[in-house]
Each structure stands twice: as C-alpha cells, then as structure tokens.
Image (cartoon, rainbow, N blue to C red; front, side):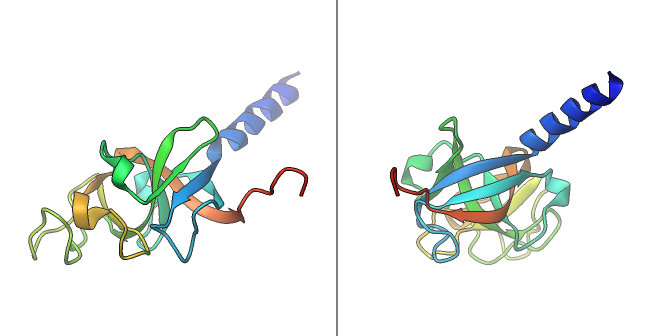
Length: 147
C-alpha cells in the first residue's frame, strides 16, 4: 500500500514539474516562433543561468508585448532570455539602471531574441518571484485537426 502511495506522489510531482506553454508573438524569433509550443520545467530563481530561456508572469502591461505565451488554462506568460542574474552587472540599455548598477537580489534582466521585443530594455528588472521556469524543449506548432 505504501509503495502505491509513493508512486502516486512521484507521478503528481512529475506532472506538475513541467508545463506546456503556447507561444504567441515573435519576441523570441527566430529561436521560438509565434504559434509554437514549448515545454517549461519549473525552476526557482537560484537554478536559473544566464542564457536560459525562461517563462515569467508578465507585468501589468503585457498586451503590448509581442512575446508571450499561455498555458493550457489560458494564463499569460512572457517568454524571454536571461541576460543578467542577481549581483551581476546590469547590461547596457536596461530601463531604470545606471552604468555601474548590479541586478538587485531576487531580480532578473531578460530580453527577447527579436530586437523589437518589449523586455528589460523597456520595463527594467523582472522580479524572480514571477518566474515559472526554463524552456527545456520546443514542440513546434500544434497539428491542425485531421492532419
């Protein structure tokens, strides 16, 4: 009986550790295109590395952002690449930061691969507590019904 309970608990943990997000917009093009789906592994800020493609809860003004995704429940998320972590020097062009500033604790600097992306260049630091996780795999676009 205990073995079954442990297996069920492990299955639940595995199921909730990854999320599929459908990308809307071109902020990560050409790496990830509009309409593609990606697998996101939930990760805390401490496990994030510079260069990771992450999914974060968007700021209030996300309607203007050309790089967001939704999970299967329709919740909106920003899909961006990490360019600086807490304690690192702030990259040039980050909104609200000076040339000698460092990224504050609990924050990230993120940018879309597309230069037209609305990201830290416009919004400054993204709070790490808005982080869903890292993109671990592209699934491509969903198949059309009957295809």
